[in-house]
Amino acid sequence: MAQIITPAFPRTRLRRLKQSESLRCMVRETALTPSDFIWPVFVQAGKNDVSDVPSMPGVQRHTVDRLPALARDAADLGIPAICIFPYTDPALKTAGCEEAWNPDNLSNQAIRAIKDAVPDIAVMTDIALDPYNINGHDGIVRDGVIVNDETVDALVRMGQAQAAAGADILGPSDMMDGRIGALRDMLEAEGYSNVSILSYAAKYASAFYGPFRDAVGAAGALVGDKKTYQMDPANSDEALRLVQRDLQEGADMVMVKPGMAYLDICRRVKDAFGAPTFAYQVSGEYAMLQAAAANGWLDGEAVMMESLIAFKRAGCDGILTYFAPTAARLLQ
Ligand code: PBG
Image (cartoon, rainbow, N blue to C red):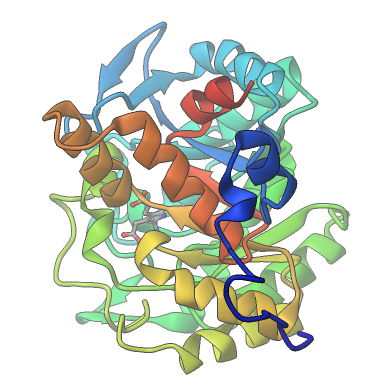
């Protein structure tokens, strides 16, 4: 950046350009639009049914038949992508996680339903074994150890089933080593060379995921924690190594997760690589803003918009956020 020249007061009065909304908007450095959003949607089994997620006020799980209408509304609001998260029946969870690559699992049904009805919205997936794992972990567990390479093989099968169902963007969120390269090789070999990968590259072992685990029914299942594969919140240089590694293995886009407490990481990643960079404003971030708003302690709309523009200011190209439809409606 060039040197900033600021003559001394009163030649410089930084308040001059704040005097009216017209002046303020002339010098506004970033903008938020509905095209910045990826909307995470929870899916449940059944017919024409919804259920509330108690720890995420305003968020619901929907049956597959309701998704085309939701996707249509989102596309009409200018939201370019939806990300599918399935609530899996506990009876379908196994140690081998076989349901993850069932071509007719809930997630793959959802992908097909949306792509058939609303082809113009991009469908993103989640690749990790936790919804299907009797142990609640993102990887296969053997003798208490989350085994890496065997998990990568399972993730590739899972990703292949999602690509076959019509997914546009695969979202590996598992944090195993080597999964991006393995998924990219599979996509090239199987004729899905235009399917892109948005890697959850810098994903922290965060307590902000609590409400999400309720939403997908993984909270009860999880044995232990995810610290042997997700990042230590104390680390920052490691995020750059992970992002670089995933880009080198063939990720098209990268993600930092959670969002608000990790905006420094977003900025470093964007500055270091200039790659399409996304942040996930996760369930706990959504829950805390909604809870404070419900109590009248914060102005809900104002903090929602302020939190979202912060991601743009930090260098992000887009945001996965449960606020997507609400914020998009406000922006229209
Ligand atoms: C699954 C996954 C998680 C989230 C997205 N994908 C939870 C986890 O890693 O435990 C969290 C999303 C949120 O909290 O909104 N691997």
